[in-house]
Amino acid sequence: MTLGRTANAIKIKTDGGLRAVECACCGCGCYSISIPLELRSLFENANLSNLSAFGVPARFLGYLKAEFSGGIENDIWYADFTRNLPEVFPILYLGMGFYYQKSTGCLTMGIGSAAYNRIEGFIPGVYPNSDDYDELLVPEVTLFDAEDPLFACQSVGYLGSSVGCEQPGDEGFAIDDTFTINGSGSFAFWYLFINSCAGTPFPPLNIVLT
Image (cartoon, rainbow, N blue to C red; front, side):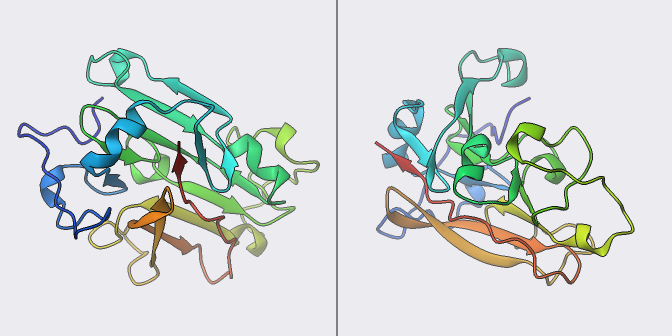
């Protein structure tokens, strides 16, 4: 599977700084952003010793098999920060990581549909009883109860702009935000709270690559 691959060359237009604008031509699509050309060498050389985000260093970084990256070996890397977050934030976060595809310059949080291309946060003490969590991350995990309104206290976040990318039923609830890369730029990120709950705030996404 290929993330954001287009038949034409990828073009980046910036606003004079690090922010990419008018990037529909980039082909990264919903739930992703296009990394500016001047930053791509940093992403292409990312490793466990030089990458951090969400205020913590990466816990894991590895490459997808060629069969999952359009047949190109070492084209897509995935970095996970989830296991480092509980030391800083006493809330269960899921999928806190990034996928970067070298051949396209696209950065995303997953592969495939929106349900697998986002980060999630749950309030303390109320977690889904499924394969989505690691019991080692939290001291106590309650059983999932779909009727419990507290379970609705969930946040979901995506890279990119919410414009044209909201899911059916979520229109009008998206909160558009930005994050930085190495302290500069204004890169798009949006999130929403499930139902009417105040939700769980996300730690700042800000990415640092040295």
